[in-house]
Structures are given as structure tokens and as C-alpha cells.
Length: 133
Image (cartoon, rainbow, N blue to C red; front, side, top):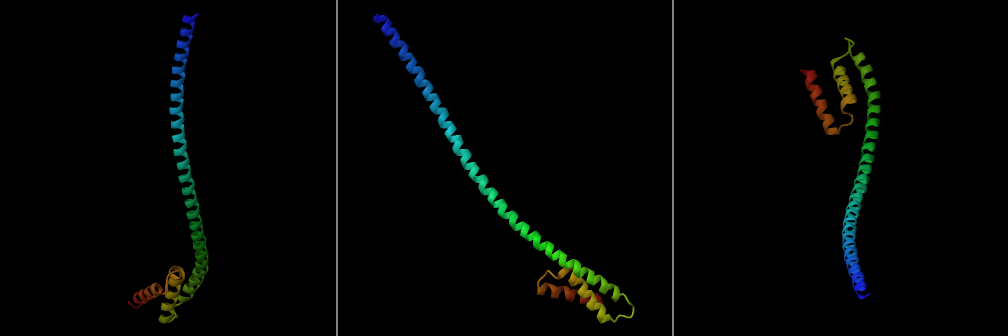
């Protein structure tokens, strides 16, 4: 009977060692899973922040596109006006000063109305030089 009790205790000791080994392995796996979870949470936070930045950038770009489209629509009207003026300026009886004014108006209407006053002045001076050659 005692031999059987020792044998059972030995079996219990073996079981205890096996369970301790399994618990240790599970704790190790749990620790690795917790580390992966933390890494994934950090990555998720980064992705959410990047997405918010991209949405903000997208709004800025969309606002710029709306502004560009508004300017382009305004230039369509100016271009039509300049084409009409150009046809009128092709009349051989048109004085040279009128042609210079027409050329300035046409180039300003098509290309430079979106520029600042200094740059428009420089374009106007270039046009005068071209015409007076």
C-alpha cells in the first residue's frame, strides 16, 4: 500500500513538473501575444494619424483645385474677349498704339492676370519691347 502511495506521489510529481512546464510555455506564448498586441496597437495608432493627415492634405488640395477651376473659368471669358479684340486688331487700319494695347490686353487676359502687379508690369514691358523692335 505504501509502495502504491509513493508511486502515486511520483506520478503526481511528474504531473506537477509537466503542468509547470506547460504553464511556463503558456506564459511565454501569452507574453509574446501581448507584445504583438502592443505592436499592433502602436501601428494602428500610426495608421490612424497618417490617415488624418492625408484627409487634411486632401482637403487642402481640393480647396486649391476649386480655386484653380474658378480662375480657369474667369480666364475662359477673358480669352474670348481677347480673341474678339485680336480679330478687330487685324484690321490694317488699326493704329500701332492700339495694336500694342491689344497685345498687352490679350497676353494679360490669357496668361498673367493671376500674377502679382510687379510680374504683370514685367510682362507688359517685355511685350512693349517685342512690339517696338
